Length: 349
Ligand SMILES: [Zn+2]
Image 1 (cartoon, helix red, strand yellow):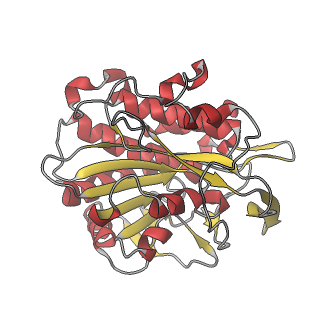
Image 2: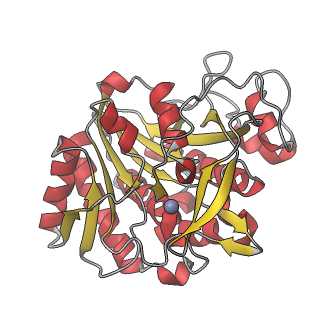
């Protein structure tokens, strides 16, 4: 979850960007020189064929949302702050999952018709501030150097359509500040685990969607929805074909059946999630924004049906060092995954 500040609106090219550390550099220039070892798994060795259950690695299929939440929340990922080494490690983890599941890369175009799993953009510097006990970011000096960041995107191609359903969650969080780790287990490793679970279930069942089913992991959400905004401005799949965006953010805490959502109106994505919520005997209310928002925002601005599903109690321990894995309730994650699975089945098949 992020506080909307309306900043970081002008995301330009990468050409003038100087890099504070070596990491993402390799990701951006991989088409012209060999990637270093730590980044080699971000680069597809060959264009994958149409994804199929036979191509998936069974160990990837058997993973659970809690496995993802534990992995992304570990100390080594340093709180996954956009533009940091921890974000890069999380990105590598996600690319590994997408590749292990046999999904097609749907990020930036490379040479020779190849695609990357990453969708690159840049971020302005930010300053930290505390608001009501929560750590948040404010825009820093807009004239300072930008830092590279990236969304991670892959998908299961549909059988006979150019239309797509996007299942998304932001994977960045707040990083380390004043010596304290902000693991972001609920915000938003929980959403990442949920959408991976939905895809794993569909793949285990061997189902082929009619519409393309796209998994998108946004970054820099905590800096003002920068990654999802960059995607809307510079999409790697045609936005005109996007029929619905199911975004998940901070979905793992509070009473199991209590959900909330953000959306601009009662669009088809909202209706599909609401129907699944009702079938599962849960409840979902429209949440007050109060200055908060999530990655459905810029899709809604483009009149694309989009919803963010979250826990009704999402603000509890949000943006504090106490947002740790034991705070996430596995039963709630499982129910959220069931709801999203049903919504996706309704619109993608
Ligand atoms: Zn947040």
